Image (tube, rainbow, N blue to C red):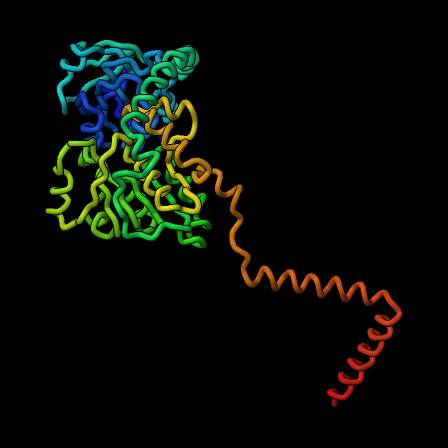
Length: 394
């Protein structure tokens, strides 16, 4: 468990003191955070991936203008924050958000945000028990969410049927995928642990490595070279892979909405990266899976991806229908990285065969030794060894 970096207030003023980093958009806030900061944002139903990014930034507290859990579905972000020891305050409202100056020193105490003794905003401090109770209540909201999901899935299939059914509009990759294993890496919850779990598989199978957005940098940080990088044309700069990562990849694919133009492609061309266009309403993560499936991969291993119903509902980018239908399209080819150690024990190496041979010879010798012929051979061998040793002695 991470221990938050917290600044204690001066004597006589209770609570937690830190520098307020304020931005209504969480994506814009994340790159500016420093250890011990107080993140002030407006993010309803915070998802687990965003919460983990805040934990990794080592913030001391998160102050949210919106409710952390609205009750529509059991989003997992607040639980991640409190388990990491981050102080959580929500519901301060738009007025409270506007009252807190970016870069100012503030104090958080009992759900209130203060500058010294001046009250700036007031909300609710959410602890582990409160969040657990609200998550239980939010699970009843799954029914309405699934009803909405039925409609969005039908709409997504109507718009993307040519892509999903016939592969229309897919870019042609230079990387050879047919018959090979493909590992798709997304910067998501527990991606580092999952990448470590499949280490033997990566070393022995030499799969095609596909990095989605920041997942390409994750691969490079692990000492691996991504073959294919898939980026989203609408992604923030903080979510884009480093330029050297893009230049080193054999294929760079830019996923964009239909008719959105060539803005991201032209920007990459100015960096010296020749990218392929992929127009689709699917998410970048799902676009990577579709590319691997269309390339006839033998198996697709997903690292950092959403695996459960609650994980899917926890998404904040409207990609639930895309994720669901893409998984149906990919079918049995897709395997979660966490399952790989249970399914793959590694190749048979020469020393494995040598040990089996030695064990077999020992068993054979033991079986022969108990027979009359074996005993006669043993006596002859013992006599020969005795004569040989005596002949060597002076």
